[in-house]
Image 1 (cartoon, rainbow, N blue to C red):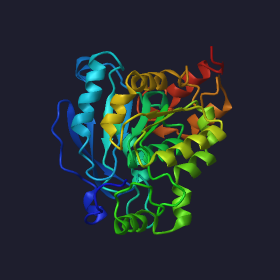
Image 2: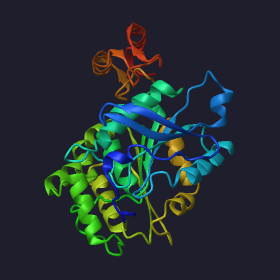
Image 3: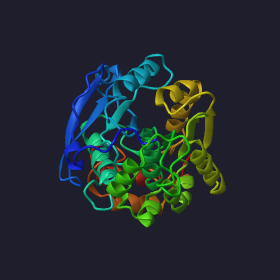
Length: 347
């Protein structure tokens, strides 16, 4: 189910109107990939102002198709309440602007490099702007519908960036985009327009960008990084069959994951999140707990070794990321010294 119709030129959608909600800020950053200013919203928990020396994990929430800002107020209330109740630790929640129907994918014609904007431009900007835990142990990727599929593609493409990947009500993840799910309300002409806009109506390009293909290609890296993976979907959702197929694929690839079908729920993000109950909070807590016990063990292998050293040297210079062990915004001698001091098996 792909929601609202494709409207207007894609280039006009790089910025959205601001959303007003408690703790929410509207931000713009200059994207190299897009060649223009791009908007996003960010929720800062009360602890962010109260504890100025503290760094916080970041939850990146990828919205579904249609209005990019529609879920922000409801979701910030949902997550903010959970933080206040101690169900999850205080965290920054970032809401990227994925436009109406970008599918969180680099379009074939290059006009909308959405995946690149998020991975290469937005995440470094967030780490440089806010007091984040600027390594994979401090990042979770989640999303619903179009955002659920996007979470799978981006998260499996870059397991070095995320401790957890959550795919809720994910779609499209079928093998043929034009194969309309039973019960879908998307008009055929709208589906064809999206197919052309994102994938150039090219089945080979669609397949190459499908989360099925990406996870199969990156399975070993996902397993090695110990990424916490989950799927969740309502039993009445027309996307259930393709999500069941994806669950079977993950199982065949020996990727540890959970798959939950919540009874009596249709294609509605709040209903799925509420129905997951405590299991939802358990997922976030587990994802933040399992990554590398030591920051210097960049690949989470259990040993600080030449692989980690190569990653650090490859990232040398300005920038945040897993190799910036001290969070200074620069991969330099201080990080190298910390890595060498931790050399060998992780205790």
